[in-house]
Amino acid sequence: MRIGRVVAGTMALAATTIMATSESAAAGVTPRIGSDHTYSGRQHTPSVPLYKGSGVAQHQYRVAVYTGGEEGGGTDANVYITIYGTRGSAGPIRLDNSANNFETGKTDRFTLGLRNLGRLKSIKIRHDNSGRKPGWYLNRVTIDGNAKFSAYRWLAKDEEDHRTWVKLSRD
Image 1 (spheres, rainbow, N blue to C red):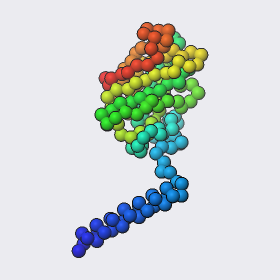
Image 2: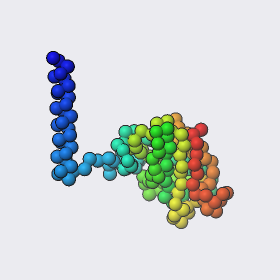
Image 3: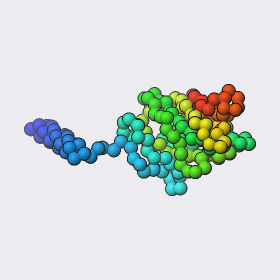
Image 4: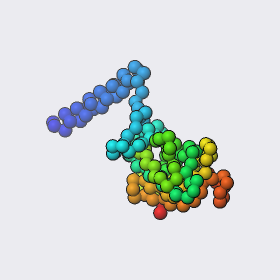
């Protein structure tokens, strides 16, 4: 009976997989959920380490952060993003890929390895108000080129509403 052989073969394969997983666990080997390495889809595109959140990285999100051209619009602070989708959220994740991120008039690009969050709905982006010049003028954020989040505002203790964070809905 052909179906019986296929089922038996599948069960043997599953048993082998469980056995290998058990042997790995007994040997003290832990399956990797993230990576300490960076990933970049293009050469010379800086990226951040894969996020070590819960679940397995199933999707590479390409995040572009546009800092405004206003005088003093760049920041020395640490910047964090939380991404919300129809299948959950991820973050906060620190965005850092070089010594001079978020400079006036510049665009910073990051690649985040996360579980699939479904259709992206909103983001929360903030900074920790650290560094010599923490105030930041955020123009917008795009994720995967098609999810756009417009801010066009200061994230600064000494500007507008004195907040260093903003939650943005998808445009």
